[in-house]
Image 1 (cartoon, rainbow, N blue to C red):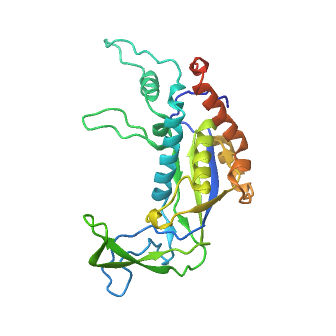
Image 2 (cartoon, helix red, strand yellow; image 1 turned 45 degrees about the horizontal axis):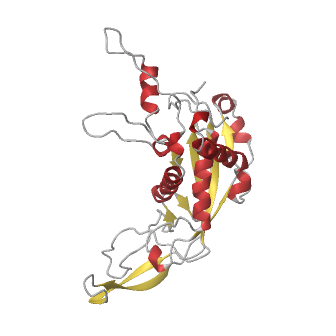
Image 3 (tube, rainbow, N blue to C red; image 1 turned 135 degrees about the horizontal axis):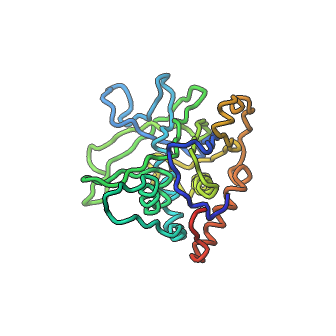
Length: 279
């Protein structure tokens, strides 16, 4: 797809579905908390676990980190400057406005972040748009023995250790692996590139996952499988189920084409006259 493929992305039709798996490996300890524990025999700050008692990375946590990465890229490089010419709606009259034109008009107002992660209308009405990006929980396939670390509360006024405020927290040890899956509906290639770049930022340490990052936690290594591109006809024929699962590998080679399209979008943001109406 061309970088100027800025057409509205509707949820109604299934133009293509992009699926790939990801593997997170802890370079350092990781703490994604489950809240304060009332168990007197347990940790004060346990990590989140699945039904089998194994630590997990909830999709919402990874989603928040990737969203902040996409937003940072978009704002820093002014990617929202690359837009199609605005669609003009006819003045109010006896004839109803074409819903497709109304949707296109509202779509063009969305930022790149909102087009990927969705937008909730403000109170009193407005335009809502559901996310086209879904991220599963990432789970470990083996039992993990968490570490227990001590912590001390800090007095905000004296900036010293507060008297009697001692706690402990659970930490998933370095080397633990978590596997999950990402589903992206009707994306443009540069949108996939944006997501891949955010994953690369997490891999490089430009983004950190979970809490207590000031204590050195949350540094991750990220590997992904090559994305699978499916459409309605492929799914109807069952061909999608026949595709062999690809091996995990570094992000850049797996998303070489999509990252190239993102670089084209960056070039277009430096020359806004290249932004054209969608065909």
